[in-house]
Amino acid sequence: MEAGCEFSVAILAGGQSRRFGQDKTLTAINGRSLTSILADGLSDLSDDTMVICKNPGKFSDLNNVRLLADVYDKQCPLVGIITALLNSKYEKVFVASADTPFVQRKLVEYMSLKDGDAVLPKTNNKIHTLTGFYSKCLLTNLKKQYFKGNYRIIDMMDEIDVRYVDEEECRQFDENMLSFININTKKDYKDAVEILKKIGYTL
Image 1 (tube, rainbow, N blue to C red):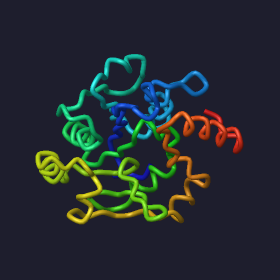
Image 2 (cartoon, rainbow, N blue to C red):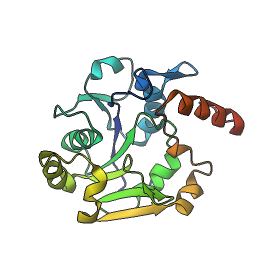
Image 3 (cartoon, one colour):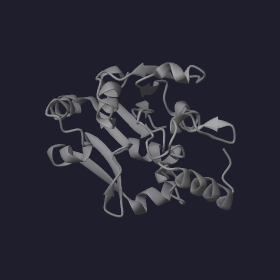
Image 4 (cartoon, helix red, strand yellow):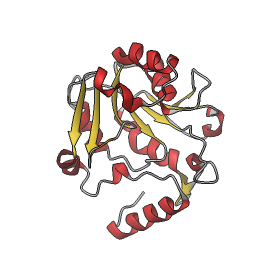
């Protein structure tokens, strides 16, 4: 890492897993939970890695992370990001969801060097709000959004300084776009395992 690029990491491990049928954050691949895979992959990028959810005790087996409970009752990613920014050691926080367990460190390092109150990947016209950087200066905007009852992070993008990282940039550091494999259903899980086998990716 280049000097001056220190940041915190926040893994959002909430969600109700309705489509998956069980708590997907604890679902294992090769004997390791999705949350553990992501934590192990990212924790050495920062000396401040947080796992955030409603019931952090379920992750008591994780090492080198801080376990934090959401600061508000509503269960949504917006609350997880607010919790992360309120508790982070550094100004910038890389936020990732536990159901995207294969986020690539080189891509995170590249994004950390970009300026912007938020730095987010944008591929196929989709903004990946849960695979990117947020700064503490956004807390006022995020809290305002929450107390308005609008929990969609995407709805505040026009109001803040966002630096988007396009697909070409992403592929320079994540050729197979593993960072954007999102496991929401059992089929997603099976597809992810097959992709990993196909490219010879080892956990």
